[in-house]
Length: 211
Image (cartoon, rainbow, N blue to C red; front, side, top):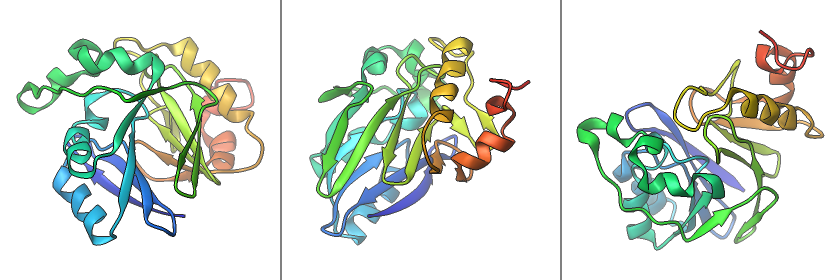
């Protein structure tokens, strides 16, 4: 398994392109700059089977339509965020330059515990609401794609429509309970490890949530 991280869009979202040894792959959170994403796909000769969203905020899906049209990939969206695809208040699309619209429709909704198979890739869904109602993390091998739930030293905001401080608190407890260690690939900022966040992130401290 290999992956490429490319920062895209208005908010420097981390878009991840995963692929196996047979060049079967997925794109996670294509938040903008579709040309850059598609060039990488072409350069590596990838067959993209799915576009996965960790949650439905505009900075994580603005390039999804272009990627889907160019690759034939299916769009997979967390169940409790599916309605946000057609709700500009939930997706925050009005904050994008020019208030860009979208006509995305999910091909499959994802629930906690679901598994996605793309070639040799096995991706497990972890529902981690809080940043949005449907916010989800994806586990692929020893990698944890945390979206905007967990960042290096911080967590996602909960003051957007649908956000919940209590829900993200419970989601962080869920991540803390994972056995072993993972490389954490967040939706923004640098990568980290789950063990480093358990010990150094104030929101995952031993008292249950930190300060």
